[in-house]
Length: 272
Ligand SMILES: C[S@@+](CC[C@H](N)C(=O)[O-])C[C@H]1O[C@@H](n2cnc3c(N)ncnc32)[C@H](O)[C@@H]1O
Image (tube, rainbow, N blue to C red; front, side, top):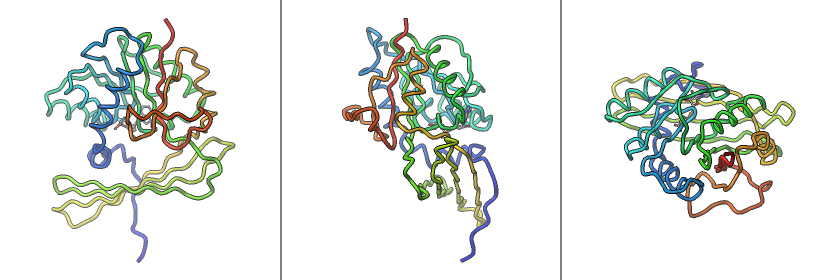
């Protein structure tokens, strides 16, 4: 069989296809955000309505879920198509939220937040140390004292010599998406790893398949590298770690440097 012809695309320009894959875990992740707040924030007296910030909010799946639970949500993203999809999602669900175009590396928003979250390794799209530190400092500036930042990242195994492959599928209302992601071995010197995402999309009412391919670089982090970056932002103190099952009853208990794979870092704003 010849290789199908994929067209170069930015898959964040197709929010609907993105949602078919990633909307499946939204309720569990939103439960985790609320539970992490109760367990790890150092703010006395739990407000019923949290002020929640989502850097790189994408098409707003988490924002909408948390808004529908009564919280005040704010999110930003650099992709206009994602933001448009988020606005439409809010309108059709009759929910309220604040959306803005901004970049992870540098942002300024009104007010302070109880909690911020960025759960699906998006932090690794920031390609420089300067950008990563600036992002963490911006988050710290926007958190109330005692507030927390839930930051999920896939930690790098520099001994990996083979490509990693992940496959997801999703279907809804006659649209079927298969997503294959390939990650090349990390380059310890440049701290970059190449990632390719291939989407195969079929609509029930259209016999033609759509084949879309996105290629990115992501920044790599071992546990040690991540903690060295965090240490540059003294306002944020790591207080707990979880894996991507998002089970608040099962924190990761190993030593910091032994953390590996998918980790959610709970970072508390310990400044006054
Ligand atoms: C994997 S999606 C996550 C979306 C959302 N947080 C979620 O959980 O569904 C990554 C998002 O990050 C955005 N993004 C990537 N790099 C960014 C940057 N430097 N600044 C702002 N947004 C960025 C993309 O446009 C995309 O919407």
